[in-house]
Picture 1 (spheres, rainbow, N blue to C red):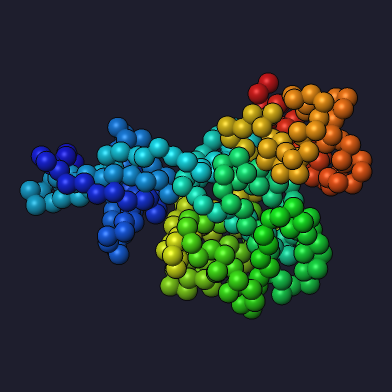
Picture 2: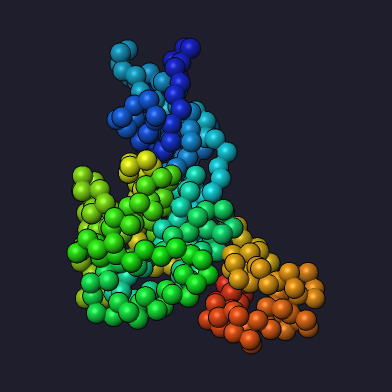
Length: 305
């Protein structure tokens, strides 16, 4: 396709990506608008604000849209795998809803990584505990209680029974909210309950307990005054574009106490006058969180080497 002479343009946000084809949502139109990716503009992802231009098809009266420009990105969520492959999941995110479940149980280290990414990008975190209708819910609540004590909001829900969904819906009712979590925690089931018309495919947990992937692409669904963005379930989440020295800013309790360290470049390992290690000894910082900080920092340092 080629641009039309004096082509019309429209501005919208990407709500779905299917390879070379994307769908745009605009404030002027209710329906989604299909548009083609453009090499000159770069590869668009869900959440991107873009400007599209009309283009002519093979037939004289065939007209479509193509992305002409992608606006500068902010509040992005990236991921990387063990193969060191970086992938931009979405941009323009206001809220990161980290979904865990009673079964499979919460993976605190994975939650820590999501929170670091959110803190560094200026994205508001929200923790969601699903499947509270199952045995073991009190243990799962206790696991996530330490995050709540740090000021992270927590919604405990049962997608199956409907418990807590009204509170969760209110928390997600404004802005662009990205739902993340490892496979099997029930993200798609939650979205089906919040948006019955979405008709997202769900699957039962595999017998191994690891779960099966149900969502294959990031998709934004209109919800009340905003959008809900569903993503594929993942088993690992590597931080992208984060320097080892920046990790402390992703741990809010460490960030606050680090100002009291004797050295401004303190890594909080064995340096003298470290206020963070002193706080760990005194119980002001949870030992598990401190150990998680060290693991994340060391993994980034190893990646640099």
